[in-house]
Length: 156
Length: 156
DNA sequence: GTAATATAGTCAACGTGGTTGACGAAATAG
DNA sequence: CTATTTCGTCAACCACGTTGACTATATTAC
Image (cartoon, rainbow over all chains, first blue to last red; front, side, top):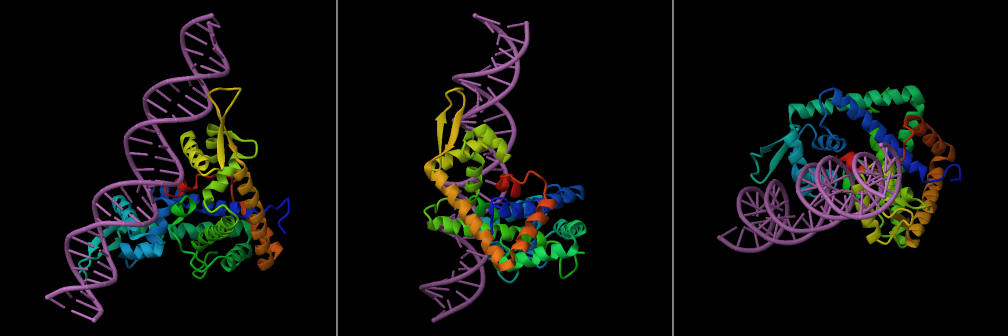
C-alpha cells in the first residue's frame, strides 16, 4: 500500500532521477572522452540509426516521431559530425543516414560507460538488486521501451 | 557485472520506461477525470507552486530554470485555468502565483492516482520489491531529486 | 532624504525539438 | 501510360529553454 511515509508520487520521481543520474554520469564521462557536444537525446538517435544506417522516414518511425522531426534531428547530428547523408543508388528518393567514424566512436564509448555505470550500481546495491530492478521494470513497462519522443511527450 | 545478456544501457532505458509508464497511466486517468489538458510537466509545476503559492522568480529557482522560463510556464497554466496571478500587497514588484480550484483539484487527483498506481505495482511485484526499488534508487540518486528542467536537460 | 544598488517581472531574439500541411521528384501499381 | 504511393523538404506554427535589456519598485548606504 502507498502510505503517508511512502506516497505514490515518489516512485516516478525516483525512476526519473535514476535515469537522469545515469545519463548525467554518462555525459560527464563522454565529455571527458572528447564528446562534449553529445546531448542525452543524441545517443538515442545514434542507437536508432544503428550500424547499418537507415533513412529519415524509417528513423522517424523507430523514434516515434514524424519524418520531418527526424530529418531535423539528423540535420543537427550531421552538423555536429556524428551522422552523414548519402544517396541511395537503388532509390533516388531516399537518402541514407549513416554514422560517421565519430558517431561510431561516441556510440561505442557510450556502451562501455553504461556498462561501467551498471557495474558501479551493482557494487553498491549488489548485483542481484540491480538485476531485480531490471526484471521488475521489464514486467511493468510495455514492450516498446525504445521510444525517443521524450521532449515532445513530456511537454507536448 | 554488465554482461552481454545484461548490457548496461538497458538499465537507464528501463528506468525511463518505468517513469513514462506511470506518467502515461496517470494522465490517461486524469483525462478521464476532467483534466485532459494537463501535461506531464504541468503536474511538476503545480507541485512546485504548492498550496501556499509562490512567485515566478522563486518558482524558477525551485524548478532549476530561469525566471523568464518560469513566467512563460505560468502563462500557459493560467491560460489553462490551473494557476492565477495576484498582486502582492506587501511588494508591488511581486506577482503571487496561486493555484485555482481547478489546480487544487488536479493536484489532489494526481496524488490519489499515483497512490493507486503504486498499489497496482505492489500487487504485481510485491510490496517489498517496490519498496526495495525506492530504497535502492534513493541510495543512487543525489538529494535534489526534485528537478523539473527535463525538456531543456534532455535536448538542450 | 537622496543616491546607488538589488530584485521582480516582462519583452525580444534566438535555439532545440515537436507538429501539420503542401509540394516536387521518383518508384510502383493498375 | 496513368494513378497512386513514398521520400525528402519547405513553411508555418507551438512548447519550452536560453541570454540580454529594460522598467518599476525595494532596499541599502551615506
